[in-house]
Amino acid sequence: MNKKKVILALTIIILTVSAIFGLYPFLGKKPFANINEADISSASVQLMPPNKTIQITQLSKLADVLKDIVIYNKDDSYKEYGGQAVIITITMTDGTKTVINAYNPFVVIDGIGYRTKYEQCERLSQFANDLLQIKE
Image (cartoon, rainbow, N blue to C red):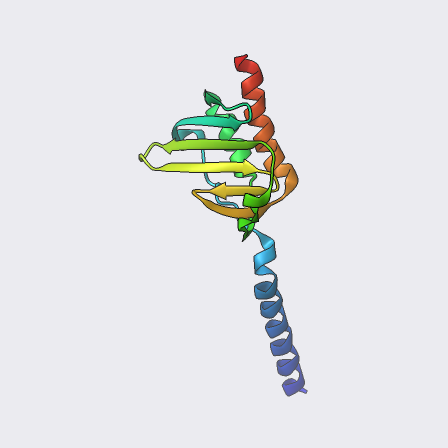
């Protein structure tokens, strides 16, 4: 009887671990989960079209939007899509720079494209376009 329980428990553990590793690529990662306004020294956004660059002063709002971005598998097919590119350049307080290109349904981080959910990428694009409206 004890042997059956041990075998059943091991089987459940093996199936659980297999399921977790099998689903891992679909779970996604939040590359900016820990970003805070205090981490950002400066930021700008370039919108193409209309080919305008804007200095971002709402750093806390930017950090909040970035925290929600979830990336999935690497995907370079963003190069085949058309539409508006929202390119955000962030300079961190430690001097490092990160370039984020919101190109729905993709996010390109430092030149590497990832699939993302439409709503998250759209929120980043909307944030940038709202800045353009304020500037004009």
